[in-house]
Image (cartoon, one colour):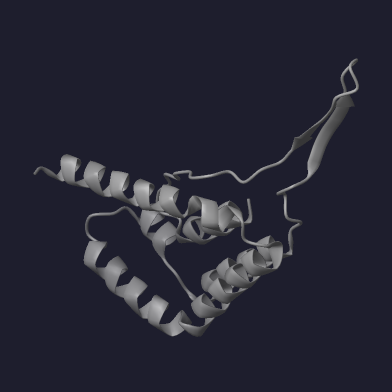
Length: 144
């Protein structure tokens, strides 16, 4: 199997697993979603030194094949990791968008209709060379 087919297979498997879990995740209460996001921030902060060490190895391994701007975007240091954690905490503090009444109206026959926000479902995110995007996207998707 060539690399493209292998990647396609892996993406489809990940998507199928996500779809199978999406109903359970969509039913999580706000408090639980916020706790998961806060715990993610704590785990990242508690593993800061290890993350910096492994990131340094990755940077060193690919230093010759990547330009300096890309290497800078990929670099994790204490301040950047702190910013990732703060971003997660900020997301946990956001109002839960699920279950909000976005509109209501009545039909001439008396039927009352509401438009209510629902969970996003399964999404895919493609991004390049921004370690903070993985944390932000995951937290925003969980919250939404």
